[in-house]
Amino acid sequence: MRNPLKLRKNKNFDYSPRYYKGQGNPYKIEHKLDQFRSTAHTNRGLKNKFTSAMDDLQTEGDRNLKIRFWIIVAVLILLFLFIIDFDLSIFWNP
Image 1 (cartoon, rainbow, N blue to C red):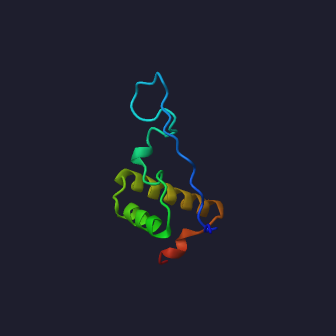
Image 2: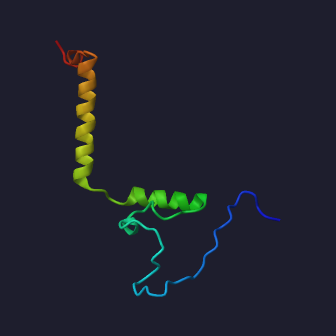
Image 3: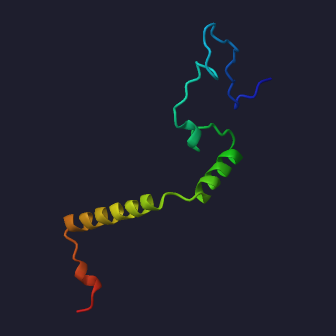
């Protein structure tokens, strides 16, 4: 009896074209940068997904990207406060 929660895998055929002289499978659809992405490879199971998420958390990101992100967030917050006409003088003593 089959497990109804598991998906059936597709059949794989080892067909190679007659005149193809390159490396690897010419019919494999893959993006150029998939080898550098951590999310491009399928991780089945809850444990594998959790471990890949923890690995992504532990890797250091680009410092300039983080600084740029926080600057954009700060500008958007200030813009929002300006639009709703928020008075910032309540934070300073008279």
